[in-house]
Image (cartoon, rainbow, N blue to C red):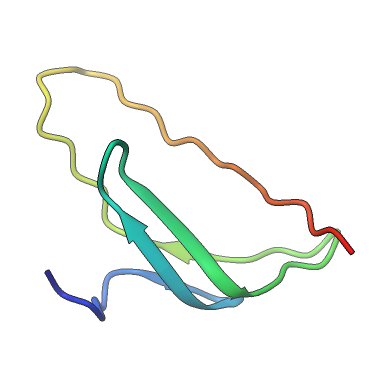
Length: 65
């Protein structure tokens, strides 16, 4: 597995973690997006299951402190 792929990128986050089981997950780290600002994310998604529809779930983390 490629530890530093070129096809995963974010304008505001320096690092990321990938987990493949039990669900595929991409966690962007070491960055932030201020309120009312935008960020860009690029990554390749493939799905080999025989279904017409699949879902991308976003889980924003609210900082504490």
